[in-house]
Length: 226
Image (cartoon, rainbow, N blue to C red):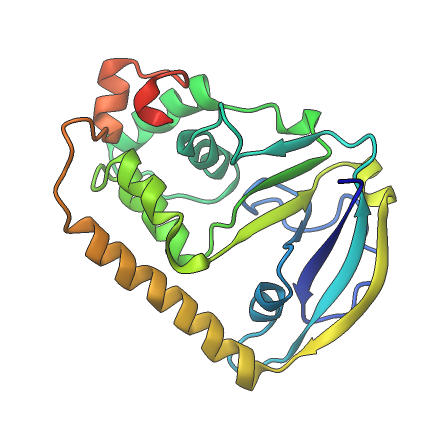
């Protein structure tokens, strides 16, 4: 695939994204966050009382190095480690503090070596699931299952100046808050309901909680993580 179409939901029309701008505490750090879904971009663009825009781009992938967290060899713990390194978490107890140290030591990824990152988007629901795992309330297996619930979507993030240079603006579509904010809320509510239902299921003997991972010295190649 030489070229992909991407969408960026925003309150503004953005014809020329600027490398080096953006919030430093996003999921994967500073970058330009997009999706391959027009509908998700429209939902992400709006707030309850604010319309937005789904900006459309073509990204030429030729020569770009992509980190795709859905590929074999990467685990949910790689994703949550990226969140720990970039998002703001309150480290409420010693397990979380020890867990962060362990995950950063063993599951960190050299994100700055990549031009593009593709992975889950830690919206309100996913961020809550991640916090439940860090508080030793759900296993990594349940967390992995939760990330597939509700069709909350993946994001494609441009990380390098090279990738910004290979992005071409194609136009935009308006996103009406009256239409897309209820859809956004409904998608999140569906994910929460599915998560609560899934959480009541029977635990497997192989379920690994954060404390188990630390005590057992679990590494990325452990088959229970795949």
